[in-house]
Each structure stands twice: as C-alpha cells, then as structure tokens.
Amino acid sequence: MNRPFLGYGLGLRAQHFQHVVDTRPDVDWFEVISENLMVGGGKPKYFLHAIRDHYPMVMHGVSLSIGSTDELDFDYLRALRVLASEIQPEWISDHLCWTGAHGFNSHDLLPLPYTEEALEHVSRRIQAVQDFLGRRLLIENVSSYLTYRQSTMTEWEFIAEVLNRADCLLLLDVNNVYVSARNHGFEPRDYLDALPSERVWQIHLAGHTDNGDHLIDTHDQDVCDSVWSLYRHVIERFGPISTMIERDDNIPEFSELEAELAIARQLAATLEHGPETQAAHEQCHRFA
Image (cartoon, rainbow, N blue to C red; front, side, top):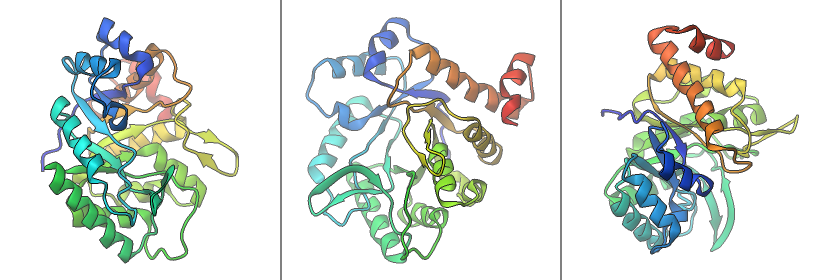
C-alpha cells in the first residue's frame, strides 16, 4: 500500500483558531479532535470549515474504546461518519485502549492485556468499525503505567499482530513509546524496530512530565531530547512519515509550536539530504 506523506502538522486547538484563519501559517496540515466537533454548528464548526478550505486535515478520536467489552457505540460512530463526510479527512484515528466497561467511562486511555483473547477481540472490533466507516482506521499506541500478569507477548508484538489481523494502520506516538519504555524498563528501539513499516502512517510527538521514578504523558511540555532522538531513529528506519506536534495543556503561542515543528522538518531534511545548511546542522546535531 502507498503511504501518503502530508508533511508536518499541528493539533488544531481553539486558542489558535483566529490566528490560523488570519495568517494562514506555514503548516502543512492539522489534526482535529473528533469529539470536539461532533456538533451541529457554532463557532468551532465555523472555524473548522474556514481552516479546512486551506489545509488538509485528519481526525483523531479519544472515545472509541476499541478494547472495551461493552458493545460498540454506533450512535458515536454515526456522528463520526457524519463529521468525516463534512470535512473529508485524510484519515481517522483513535487509540488502542479501553476507556471503560459496563457503561462506566474512566475518561482515561487504559492499556490492554497482551493476550491472544484480547488480540482476537480488538481485531474483530477494529474490522467492524472499518466496515462501518468505509475506510481503514489508524490506531495509536498509548502510554502505560501498569502491566498485566496475564500478558503473553510484548506490546510491540501485540500491535504488529493487530495491524495484520485487522488490516488497519498505525499512528505511532513516539513520546508514548518513550514514556512506557521508561516506566516498564524496556528498550524503546526494540519496540520501534519490530513495527511493520508499511503500516506506520502518522507520527505524534509530544512532551511529558518526569516524576523521577515514572513519566506521565501530559502533553504540556516541549518534546524532550530523548524523544527527538527516537524520532530520528524512526525516520531512519521508516522514511518520511506525516508528523505532528501534540500540545493539549500549557498551550503556548502558535509561533512556539511552529518553531518546534521546524525541528522535525530540519531533522528529517538532514537525514534525507545531508546537512544542507549550517543552521539546520546546528539545530539538529544534539539529537544525533
């Protein structure tokens, strides 16, 4: 399958709506949070369409709960399909996790046990969602803070097999790999090297909070040096992949996010073409 390359994007947040409409910044594409826009109208929808007229978009969800034992929520999926028909996203993504059971919503992205039973369960559900939406789904690896004694395989083995059985695609969150690796004591490059390259269609880069003995995926900090180093490894292994910066709290001025996104652009450019300019080299050499 041919992987499209959108370039370098940002998460579209309400704080920046007016700035994007007024200035049309040099960003290749935007990712929107699906649930924030599943409404009939209003100001968010106005800005959504004004921005969509000039930029490609992808939709990213947080409520699919694909790993739950509850029935799939087809009211939610219908609303998701309506939104997709409005903005025609390049793709739709959600998380490989569960968010609740028995009608209770934890409002958190909870990891799955890595077992054959969970593998079969989640693969069937992804296939059902894809059939309903009429398109392939991108699933995202989540950060985790616990493991299950029942697990019989590694997270990366589990993900690779889900991608194969469900014939879906991967949104690779490099920060989540780093956070989980630090929390559970595995080598993050082992994880990255085990992924099927043709299934990796998007990358998230984000910051986290370091609490010493554990990390929390907070999306409220700049991308750290260690995550940039892993991103370099990803691009070396997989080639150019549509990449974006995620920021959900402590959101800075748009120009600061553009500057951070420029690091990803320059880092990828030096790997593809060599250090074409001294400025690019100076920006990227500390991540080598």
